[in-house]
Amino acid sequence: GVLSGGEKRRLIMASMIAERKKVLLLDEPFSGLDWTGVRDFLSVLLTFHQKGDTILLISHDLDKFLGHVEQVFLLNQGRLIHQGSPVEIWSQLLPNEVHPPHTAPEDYQKATWLRDKASL
Image (cartoon, rainbow, N blue to C red; front, top):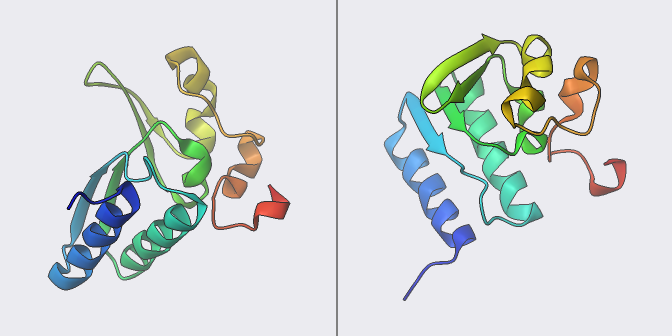
């Protein structure tokens, strides 16, 4: 049978746990996931990061995870055009067609789906 987006992500999570990779490269890992799926996957990623693993996450959907990152690398047509902390990179998002999260730059830690739905 064909796996749904959420089932594919759960399979990836199980594979990550089994293999214990030190560097993870993920391209749009939250695509097609519902609220619970995003929260579950993000929780697993943060657990890996807390254990010292490096996670490189490619995504246009900053609202889901920006509150947890240390560095942002802004690419355009495969070229690095800006790099810095979430606050440092904020002013470069819209001019480069990346929608910023629905929060102020100094409150970027609120850009996460690990908060309760009611607080969003």
